[in-house]
Length: 71
Image (cartoon, rainbow, N blue to C red; front, top):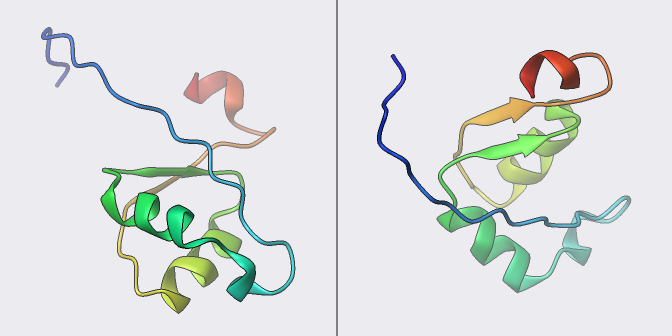
């Protein structure tokens, strides 16, 4: 069901480490912990990162295969 009330939000773009997961910044982890949802290109890689830092959030995949449909 779509709510007709307008809700403003904030978009955070967080770079994540390519190799060593410990290279992520404290600020990135703090932001990931406080957001309502996470949109990721690859949910498998994102799940690995979130699991390592015990972050439990709903992840929505958006990638080249579904971006037009999701937009």
